[in-house]
Image (cartoon, rainbow, N blue to C red; front, side, top):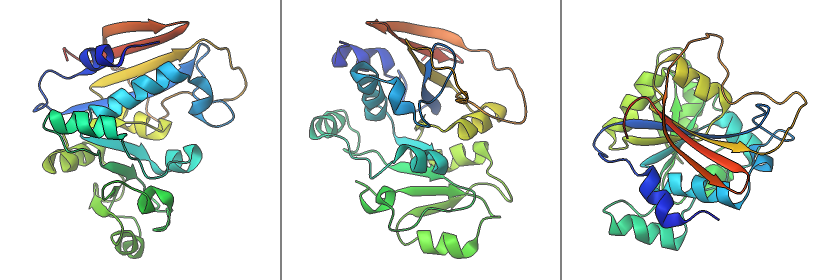
Length: 236
């Protein structure tokens, strides 16, 4: 079993004043991002501990609307112990969550909004429905990031302008692919699950444009047969 204090030490960013977009994913040995359409089937308690540690250390969690629906995201609330740790380190007790959506097909009564610990954020673009933006503004802060399509660089800048520079992206693959294409990914935290999945499961990133972004290995952790990799574009 991984040690929480050691995980915090290994995943902490030295200078929180510098913007850092961190992406967290899990994959099978043969590259499957999901089991039966969900990533949870690949993980275990150690992966959950890393997952929770990354949330603990972030300023904002960013997730695509498709992932909210597929993974059953409700209102995200850190445990009392994690909230207390954040307070003791000068951070707000809870982490806001931002959902990225072009079509705005989430209802205001969805648990993602209804059960949120702090007011959520909706990230969309100017071509989305003005009526839907107005409707969702009753339950979230709606930020327009791009004219007719989501612009990842504008999205990052909008979050940084709100003091949310430590950005944790939890998927899905289309959002990760867009961030890669826009060269906005500073770090990838990747769990390798010791299973062969086969089938037609997709990969962790999808985008129409193939680009190459070279990353450096920052650390390797193991717990049983699970492998936890941390890659960055530079030093942490």
